[in-house]
Length: 123
Image (cartoon, rainbow, N blue to C red; front, side, top):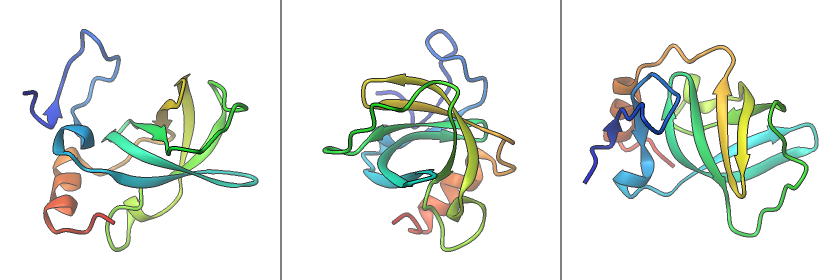
């Protein structure tokens, strides 16, 4: 089994380690905010440069396209940087899965995200 903190540059272009929510068995809701409202997603993985999410079952957004500028709210923590809308760009869309690039990158480290999770602040 892969470790939740993984780095696999052969299949992934991101250079930073990430927290893999799928490997932890976490089903964490996050919001992808657009001018007309927000889309509910499940957070699959997260690192300082971006995130991978999947649209929740029953959510349809055929208008999503690579390069779209949106806001992303990971809904992690009781307050602070992972509890607000973060500017992002859609890097890729493959079916219901979406790759996000944060603009700018988060100042939090992967270990900071682990600390939030270990304190039970995930909702």
